[in-house]
Length: 72
Image (cartoon, rainbow, N blue to C red):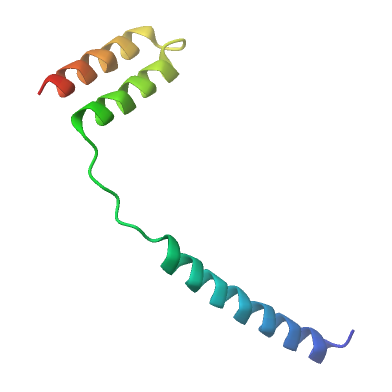
């Protein structure tokens, strides 16, 4: 394969990638809806679950914060 052939192939592939990237970006871009207080609290509880084994005191703080946030 010669350098000229590779150059054209690389340019072609680059162009195709850009074309598909733009197409997929335009089709998948959606505005996210705001999370509810419950959903935010659940995310915080999930983080607490992740650290519960390594730092139980911090996990308890996160659970308490989630409860306070959910109740308003």
